[in-house]
Length: 265
Image (cartoon, rainbow, N blue to C red; front, side, top):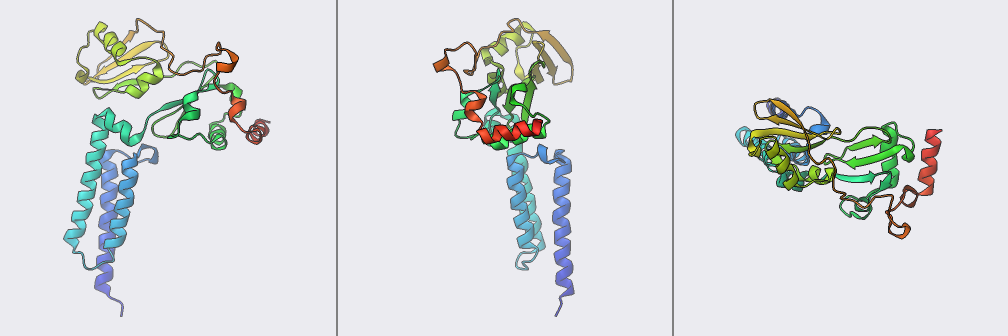
């Protein structure tokens, strides 16, 4: 016989679970998929398991159900807080940004990195989705920590890098920009800043300026004293032929290149 009371309780638990998830997303400001971290994705799987498993299980009381949800929300929020405040934790959880193409050539780091295996076919598909149909038009491609691609076409300006976030040095971006933490601290000292904790954001833009935002929201722009970055990847066109990094033709399969050429046509 149909249990009306049990059905009503199940629907009520489901509504409570969905409501708490929506409130959590609203409070954290993460309302788009691109804003979700790996912790959020794992947490959503766990929450889905709790909601799907408990609402049909009468052995768990309503109080226990709510407690499970709140504890899970607390763990997710705590881990996200750690990743936002400590760059070492952020790199461990979210991964690091890395350069795929620089100076029109694939970097050796991208080809040899076992943690980020480059699939040429998928890579070309991503570029076509961004409206880029010829590899010869590309000067720089970087894979960001969130999985998105940053692409600079030949003839375009440089790429901006966030070097400090909420008082923490973003070492991955410093490496991509070709600078060291010692260099950054020296530049900030020349600008009269000695304590990174006073900074909300520091950006290095394509015009060789540091855009500095303090914790009160005040912005200052200063030109860096040494705009020449240290090369961090072996992509120079001036190497001997036997020492050069792999070319586009060495990496992209012939059938994939033909597909890109047809799309371009």
